[in-house]
Amino acid sequence: MRPYKSTLLSSTMVPAVMVAAGILTGCEIMDASAAQPKAVAANPCAAKNPCAARNPCAAKNPCNPCAAKNACNPCNPCNPCAASGGASAKCVIPRLQTAAAKNPCNPCAAKNPCNPCAAKNPCNPCAAKNPCNPCAAKNPCNPCAAKNPCNPCAAANPCNPCAASDEVELTKAEAVSAYGCLSREMQAGYNKSGNKYAAAYSNWKIYNTQPYTSGTHGGRFVNNYANAKAKAYGRYEEAGRMPPGSVLAKDSFAVKPNGKMAAGPLFLMEKMHSGFSRASGDWRYTLIMPSGQTVGVTGGKGSNNVKFCAECHMSVAEDQDSMLLLPDEVRRN
Image (cartoon, rainbow, N blue to C red; front, side, top):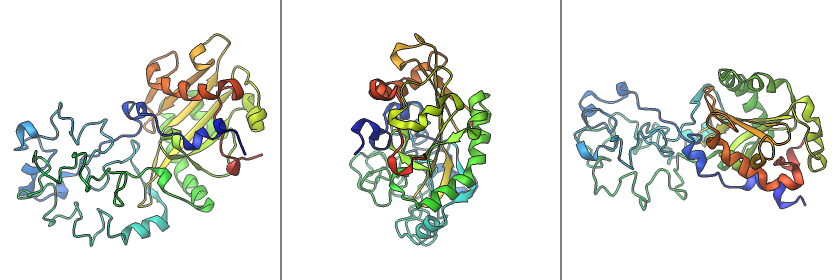
């Protein structure tokens, strides 16, 4: 059995700071054309929302469903937890897509009487006469109510549309096929960052036999790459200390229970010269969103946004030179 430290990569809970950094969030505002004209006024995202002070889009409203950092953002009733990169237009998991379409709990199922996307649905949160108007302060159906059993982000809710990737199981064939379909979209997005490693990592050696879920990376499916200077990485627990210039890259993608897929962030760690940063074990961490936005770089802009990366990896600094290793079952020799 492997040491506990080497299993952290797939079992540690996502750090709360990832939410603050915008890694686990996104806001896709519902297309106004999807709602009936008379319902626009009650649209919780409408500028002229009659809820005034209780407007869930108010900047200071803690339940603001349009808040960019709100992980449970319900502005888009069909996908309140869309990945920041947006769902792929062509890549899906057919098996999950078929199952979701038949799922009576699917909030977007065509025949679901509670489908919040249905134009004629009396439960439509944009319906003008909707008694369940989410703006109502005392509304027991308020999606921001912590104790609401219908809370779409409730962990125990079987209809939870915010389920993370680690709740989705894929066969090896599905995982490999999914990455094959989405990888070009992912790389095109990362390339917009202008980071030289973002443009080169896909040509490096990949060390996993299939994408696997990582709890420390938002429950997303990830892949491990290393450049030539980091070739010792393939010895895993016996790798020793990496020389300066070694770069490890981990790209990621999310899979929702309905089979939809979306690119996730690219995580980079580069071994720098001795004395670069004692707090990070002389590794420079870089976090790049699928849009190409660089969230942070150790010792550079947004350094605090990647502080959690160093803190997490430093838990194995002494034994594994800060490298959290991939699970035994997906290792490539």
